[in-house]
Amino acid sequence: MAVSAALALGAGVLAGVPPASAATVDTTASYVFVNRHSGKAMDLYDWSTAENAPVNQWTRNDLAVQQWQFVDAGGGFYKVRSRHSGKVLELPSGGDGTQLVQSTDRSSATQQFRLQDSAGGFVRFVNRQWSKVIDVWGWSTADGGRLAGYSDLDGANQQWQLIRLGGGTPTSPAPTTPAPAYPQPGRVTGDIGVHDPTVVRRPDGTYLVAHTGDNIALKTSTDRVAYRNAGAVFPGGAPWTTTYTGGARNLWAPDLSYRNGRYHLYYSASTFGSNRSAIFLATSTTGASGSWTNEGLVVESRTTDDFNAIDPNLTVDDQGRWWLTFGSFWSGIKMIPIDPATGRRLGTSMHGLANYGPGIEAPVLVKRGAWYYLYVSFDRCCQGAASTYRIMVGRSASPTGPFVDRAGRDMLAGGGTQILASHGSVHGPGHQAVLADTDGDVLFYHYYADNGASLLGINRIGYDAAAWPYVY
Image (cartoon, rainbow, N blue to C red):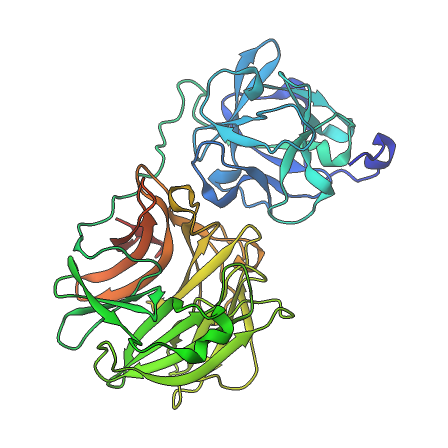
């Protein structure tokens, strides 16, 4: 970071963009802020409306997550307010490298910036409290590169072009755009302690749920509301998995489907934090405890691999091809072809579908209308009420991608549109499954209660006018 200003100013001015000046700010207009060094725009990551959500850089798209308004704070300082969330920029502490965030407007000096002119029509944002400037950390040029406070060196990574998009809503009063009102989980009763649920509707109209547990746990329901324990897939144990589990009986993240008169169950064997993992297949004609046949290993990963073979999901595309999507952390979500005759791996090809550095797992791929939708869980599971899991989605016209989010961001580069996150007493919702039921699509997931218990969550899925899913 300690690069001289003389070196930093070697970067050229953005071509074709009229110069901006600290003296020409229009408080009724919206602006996009483009960094001189990276050419990327200041962006609210993942379309977040959350308190203290990070503000990073992303390829310019001029959508609401990249639009900002100036609010006069007096003394030559401004609050910088997002057109998407209604929150303002804040530099919460004065240390070099402090992440730039958005927060509720408190008229704090940490939320106020003056504009300092740089050469070529660029400006620097100088924080009133700390006198630090907004800096692209590490001179990143990547989508998602974080923005941070840093000592003012007048470097190109600290210089911003203010691109006026036109007059907008006056800056007072504040916009009334509300934060997303995520729904409470729908009503469920009975035995609802689950983790990593998957579900299938049986030919008789009842429901079969499988989830993480000793030898894979099963539950059943007649009405999608009341659930009861239905035993384990392998009540006598699954000794073929112990190489991967360190001898433990706990098997993870199953995926249930019913095809050609037979239930297919893909499931994971691993230990926490390791990618010495494997995905196995079992089949049954009834789905009942003890009726399952071990069909063997499908795919495994070793510590020398850059992927993790857990969290499977089977999809059959419009051409009748079978695909298994899987992955957790490491290099993200993968896909392999499956032989419909055996349910096991076909060939050696592997596709990358999505990645997100802080943590991504639990893929679910479904076709609805013209689109294949890829649902994933971002961030951290398995920490009780401190879990940060959230459900994201992207889509593609092809089952193998590329998948992009609502803003057009590639999911291989961290893209994803958030559809459900922590709210109230619902903590870390994730590891989702999507069921096409008679009344429409239904989202199954687990979440943590205030006491840390992992519970079954169920909500309906709707689709907006642009065919993007939402939860209600």
